[in-house]
Image 1 (cartoon, one colour):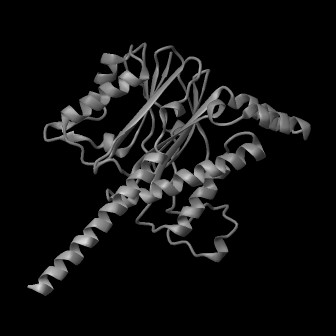
Image 2 (cartoon, rainbow, N blue to C red):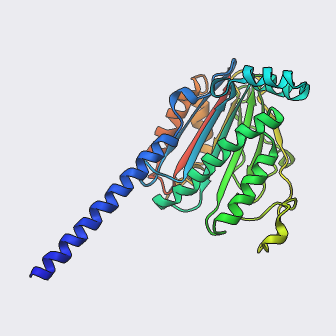
Length: 309
């Protein structure tokens, strides 16, 4: 009996320690989630996004916003570049005043600890963005080449991240790169439906961390299993008319369904058509409510709505 009691107490202590660690992980994860003030505020552009996590507040989906005017002191950087005579960088930084970025990532796996990869991406992206602004005045594909190569060397090919990073300009232009991520959807206000987009405008590359870049200077130091990937290229879409809506999403939404059928894309399109006149936040909230009423999620579900007003 005494031995059984000692074992029970030891197990209870381990359970308390594990619970404490999970609470600590949850606290850290909350710090990395976008704060309300980080949501981009651009003239004529309305943005809102959210995640429905599968396993509590910690999930494998992750959203990062970059309203360059809100997050960074662009004027200070412009003055510094002007003193050095870096005219090209000055021009790029001026353009960033009219631009906001959105990164949406989806980590493979549904375990709470898979979130660690999302945290790695979060920190590496934001740190890299600082250097990019200093060196180029803008975010370049080089940042994502470096992130991809770093993940390739520090994570298993079984644990990877799909990602889309795009920048929306006040004129409605959306330029993006995709790493194994579902392509954006463009809902036309005029026609009341998702528009057909030529595949050439939707180029995607392998998920982050699965294959090094063909331009990686350190390829000779570590053999590659699956070969190399081509250099990232930038796709460009345009929200031409007021009321047009761009939708970014993760696989959880694309694959959502029940025994009667799929939610995507038909019911999603119908829901957006129904509330297309609302602000981005209301549209997103209506989508989330409709998704949950349609079926219980089988994966983390994330969605970002970008509307031209």
